[in-house]
Length: 245
Image (cartoon, rainbow, N blue to C red; front, side):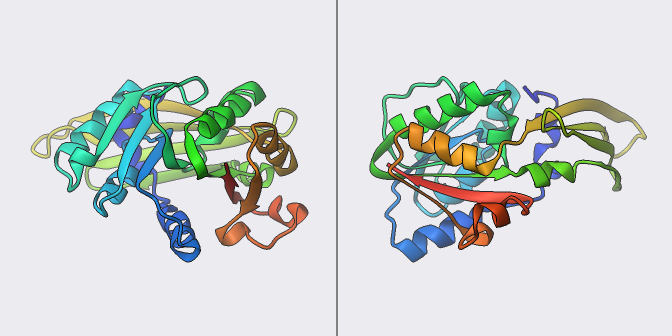
């Protein structure tokens, strides 16, 4: 999945919600020694943690994403603290337990259906140490409704054309990216790639029920999502959720 997109992922993924979870952990005095990141992409989140001395494991279904994560890790501080694996976050099994399991940048929305989401929640629970925390963010239905746009990006060595649309009946958003990157700055030759990204949104009340069914003891929202009713959270573009084992 997204093997072509891997080459441009860091350029296109402009949002970074690392401060949301790190601020929350610090405020709660939550001790984190080892982190598991589901849908880790090119490993940016774990590499930031490794620079602070926190060990981590990243899994992603894309072989190219994992290859780039490993390449980036070779040049990063704390590289001996992290490892990456090609795996399905709805069906993986590792012989380790973690203080914190994360899934960033709406990776949960990329799962194709309810069964995969519920299995991912169960996998997260099983890989947490007792008292551990599962953190993730999701696009709400309102968030994916904003996927009705066309956007062009043009830089000296890169340009892209993006278009997105949302299907109200299925609650699925589709983003199509056509991008071109200059291969050699000395000649006007560009490599082209095209990627289609699909996400599905679920009512937040349903997500909370699935977390409880996965045996998480407490579920709460943090950051911009905190202290809001479910109805108020549904009006946000994105929701930040923590579940405790």
